[in-house]
Length: 366
Ligand code: G6P
Figure: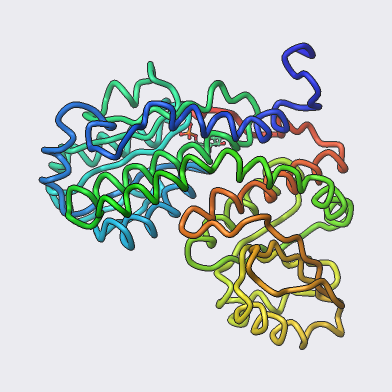
């Protein structure tokens, strides 16, 4: 009801603003990196595995896609990420020494539960879930678990569940890195320090809301949008496009920045804003020259720039600068303005933000 919403117009806005608290709660019990954060016996399991298979749907699939970059670069463990409904229906080659990781806010998504059972039926017995509901079917089914503490998420479009999943997945990366001999004590302390500073860093990003609102007024008049990201931020671009689609009903798609010239550039006109997530200066120069060709047709770049880039707003280029550069944890900061952009664009279009048409919070049918 209205009392619960406090100063916010919708649950989604409230949940976006709860992220500093949700992240702090998710980290609350973490004193040091140890496999036991994931349950008794986790050390033995982590010692026994030589690859990771992530299974999830929707927004949870995108947090898994970020985690693949972390797991391969920090823990040096081969990782694949699969959409649960695809994985369960295709023939694949099982490796019994795989750690199967499901990611789910609700813990009840039918496709993700079925994908887990499918993996197990193929002989993969090591299972772990990153889940927001301790009493869910998924937590009961898995050998190991990390419970995110986002609290109840009511808005159909997931926000605080996503950022806390990323925190859980980063902890998993560090624990696997440790067991595999890729995490010095010094590195552990540095990562823990960065994690603990996240709530403050996210708070500073939330303060960009007025600048994002100004952009949302432009987006509300568009029917298409293109999101570009690279590396760790490509899944963030995908998540930004998903958020915009889900609640504002604007057609949005995301591409790895380097692919722009291989197709989507043909779509760019004044009617197609191009959102760029976390580019470095060199990449932005390339994008600018790519877009030069379409500038005559009005192509416009909306850039969420890192604190340490030198990009300035100019013709056909609008910049919102992030308050801090956050290294490998940067996706957790960069997703926040994209959530706000989708939210305010949807508000400007007058859609039912918390209950978008045709969508359900938790899909318990296959
Ligand atoms: C639905 C929701 C999404 C969510 C997806 C996966 O489609 O609308 O917000 O990302 O299910 O849900 P889960 O609970 O498994 O994370």
